Amino acid sequence: MKEKIVLIGAGSASFTRGLVADIIRRGAETDLALVDISADALATATRLAGKMIAAGGAPVTLTGATELRAVLSGATVVICTVGVGGRRAWEQDVFVPRRHGVYVPVGDTVGPGGSSRALRMIPAMVRVAEAVLELAPEALFFNYGNPMAPVCRAIYKATGARVIGLCHGVFHVANDLADVLGVPREQLRYTAVGYNHLTWFTHVRAGGQDMLPALQRIAEERLVLRATTPHDNVFSWQLLRLFGAFPAVLDRHVTEFFPQFFRDGSYYGRRLGVDAFSFERTIAGGDEEYVEMQRDAAGDGPLPADYLARIGGEHEQVIEIVDSIRADAERIYSANLPNTGQAPNLPLGAIIEGPALADAQGLRALAQPPLPAALAGALASRYAWVETIVEAALEGSRTKFIHALVLDGYVTSLDQAVALADDLLAAQAEYLPWAR
Image 1 (cartoon, rainbow, N blue to C red):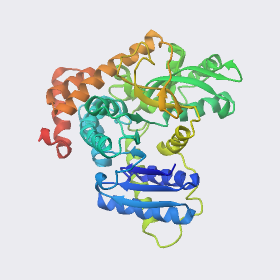
Image 2: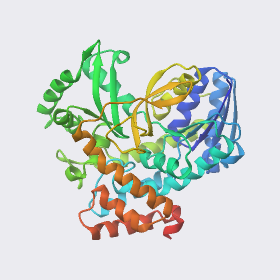
Image 3: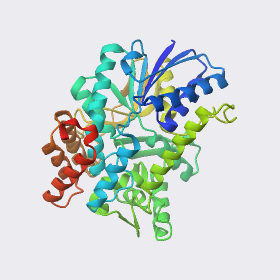
């Protein structure tokens, strides 16, 4: 079938380039609509995509719009990469907590930054979901925006829209584990279940053999060297040794789920977000990537010869997933979907990241055995936090925002929770009309 793909948040520096390249390589007739509320960002993305399509000689028609409803009718695939406020708002999610003694490397999933981001993202994504239900109710609807679990949970709770949350983290960690084990990536078989950015690899096999004992031996070797290689995901390997399961997506994200150990950013002699997984470098890298995107879009000359080559990034499986559904291919991917029983000892309705089957019925979660009690326990408080921050965002509730900060575990007193909440609300007031 001919796909009409609508990409919302097209100003994303790397996602749009990667997705357009994948569509071009697919070689099928496609209508592509790019949407961004920033006219400047949209112009850059549209011009760049147009140059890529021309260079690839692909049968792709391209349109751009600053208003979603202008292009949504008839869409067969809707992909959201929305980041309300962009990198400037994201900075405040991290820098404001720093003033309260809280240091994190990312700040987009959990912690005070994840709570703050959820307040901005959820109302916007609920409006997107409402438009999808009205104008493209049969479309495959994908979300890449963080915080993944609260955003997807809010969409289901407020609208019932069947959104699928995608993240490349499990896929990338699986490739890393294959490389560490010295086995071909395509031969690795695994089960990974949990919460986006804290998803536990509970089974890892290759060549018919259980590979977790080999990973345990590797963990022992690596932990002996931890004093000299502090950035080698020491904490993730420690968790494997203790819990018998390996966490995705490595220390840069996983440490944020354990504030009892890392609240002040102390990380094996470094500080998280500063000289360990520098947040400033992450932001600077995104800014530089966007400037490069603008330069490539605006230039009169041809794009570099390798511009249409496959690149890594969040986009990299979505077109394959769409094609697998259309072809009834029965391939398995990692996806964030509501728990309808596939994770027996996690809350029903909670957004679970786990194996899902792509076939003619869509992307369907596969039933898993119960997680060990310790792993389920590590996730339990997170799902309570999700419900609380979703209610705070949907209701515009300062009180429930404070509740979420308390549940999240980063604050050391109720007074700190109140002060941090008010500082974050003030910093993000532009995007929170109810907080002004």
